[in-house]
Length: 618
Image (cartoon, rainbow, N blue to C red; front, side, top):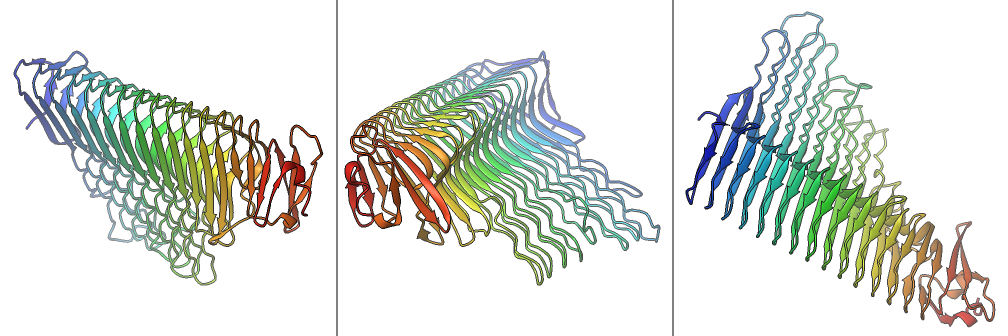
């Protein structure tokens, strides 16, 4: 079947139209190609539009480098595609061709084997025009798969380099994509191609290619799902990098491809009602170093959702789930080093993310990739960091009973060989990270913010909530929890930072917990963070370097990790209307000061005191 090219324009008025375009084995393969002045208008009815494009395979060289794979695009729209009302389905599948292999020289040439060809890019739906599915329950599916990079050729001198895998993008929107009202589903999968393996050489060998990036939905234009209970699913998987053959010690490392579920730098709007966004990004693994001194390649980043512009789910009971998993580092050779694991982040917001009013849920989960092991006497790779939610912009859930949960887990370090060292656990795990000058605002309502940070690697730090900006939970009875867990040799803080947490009016609760090797620690707060509990009968559990104001109301400070005799209390004066007190603890020779104001009740493991009796019992 040949490519379907528009114009000539295609206008139909039937009740059930089906339009199919397919192009295979071409350097630039496009299933349905709507040019800038083209128009497809199917009229009302249950319409189906399917486009498939598969790029050609690059030629393997007979005396040099391999050829590049062709690009494949399912549907390319630069004009207008309109399916109008009724239950419509638009599907695009694009696959890039594999790169050809580099030439292998069989006689001694003291040269270098041929370089592999690049894998072609694959895009399911590429829209830079106007795509409108009309009202009713519409489905838009995009699948893009990058081609594999070609392998480097072998040679009696140097081996040839493997080339990079092609990128895969499910839906790439730079124009206007509108699914109309009602319950719409937009689903997209992008998979990067594997990098080619490096060729073997009797003198030196060479690197494998990088894995291609995989992106589920890449939006730089306007994407509008309209009103209704809409579902948007984005899945991105980076390709693995190729293996490096032979002696490559001290040379540049290669990387797996990055994986992003949804990348928004335009305007993404799901309209009113109960919307669900599920997005998963998985970084590609690093290739193995298979020679004596060869080093493992690095795993790449995995990100569930990244937003650098405007992301708005409007009013309604909305749910946003982002899962990011870093790729694992490749295994090193006999005396090389293992590759580092990639970072994993559930949700990254650097601009405006707004869920509107309603009982909204934002859930971000990030897991760092594991470091690569080593064959004999080298060093294991470091594990990657994992962060649930990272915010450097404005994250606003509006009014309603909102829930924000961030879970971050650091990857494990790789195992070192005899005479070498095991890798570290990267930067550990962070549940929620709020950067300086950034804001997280949950508006009025009984809101819940939970940050879990976890790492099993050595020499790492885990944070439940790391706040250098402003977290404001607004009015009503709010609850904020930070919990960090690590192993011996690590550090854990439930709540940490130099910013401020404000809980506003209401009977609010803040709990900070740090766990080291399954044992709850006495110090769970750090960084000098400021906490303002506002008006209401508030409760705070935790201790550390911080300034805490209980505000107005009958407020309780829970220091149950300590007996009263373990702490030094100063600054308590009779008739002090501010109820100020400084509580300090000698932590292995390091004095930690906890400055408090406005608390009426103090709980310890063996007793409880009012403010007026707090200085007693030491």
